[in-house]
Amino acid sequence: MSLYQPFLNHAIPLLKEQLDLSAYPIPEGFESKEATSGKGKRQETVVTTSYGFKSPKLRQIRAAHVQGGNSLQVLNFVIFPQLNYDLPFFGADLVTLPGGHLIALDMQPLFHDEAYKKKYSDPILPIFQSYLNDLPWGGDFPEEAKPFFSPAFLWTRPQEKELVETRVLDAFKEYLDAYLNFVLAAEPISDRESLEEIKNAQMRYIGYRAAKDPARGMFTRLYGEEWTEEYIHGFLFDLERYLGVRC
Ligand code: DBV
Image (cartoon, rainbow, N blue to C red):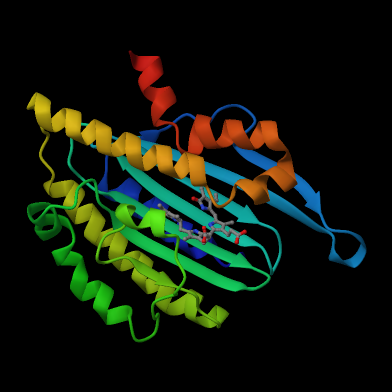
């Protein structure tokens, strides 16, 4: 079983149990994609599988799972709230490359004011702190990405696969539980000014992620440029398209 399958096996049944889930459409040709990489003994089949759901409070819950043998495993799992909630994004970027593991886990904030921090970061800080010993700060981090993370951003580069299977999985479960609590408590927002601010914050975040997707190089090498750009803008970070369709 792939390194990140247990994360999906935990998350999907839990979300189904706790939320009123329905399918989020995955564009045709993007549900599963396969390619061969490397040559000779190093040849590997790399399969990317997509998952998409939604709920009344969550516009898109989606995952991309890349499985390409021991030295290429990725699970990128993001939850995008409906635009009439002030909920943060749930973001998990779990990446295994030949050089090691890279783990990013966060409730990515819409806003940075004190009230927002108090509501959506402070409750996570004790969880965050309980992992810092085993999962210390991963260092080097793109400066321009900083505005998109919370004070509870777990960013780490574990050496041991075992740590991913144990502490990282535990952290993922705890963050997801805490996120579900936020979702259950969230109340819809109706004043126009706040709605406008939420939409702008979502557009900034999703625009940044689509523009700077660190997986762009990998996907382009594997599946070509056309497939990759359509996957990024038509599924992984699709808010602009979504709003276009609904206007
Ligand atoms: N990252 C994605 C999606 C992926 C994905 C949709 C489906 O946003 C995978 C796949 N992340 C992925 C891969 C790499 C990273 C790295 C394959 C390795 C890239 C490489 O080394 O070739 C957090 N992810 C990273 C890095 C960071 C993040 C900081 C290190 C690379 C770098 O320095 O740019 N996750 C990333 C990020 C945000 C986030 C920047 C939000 C703003 O949530």
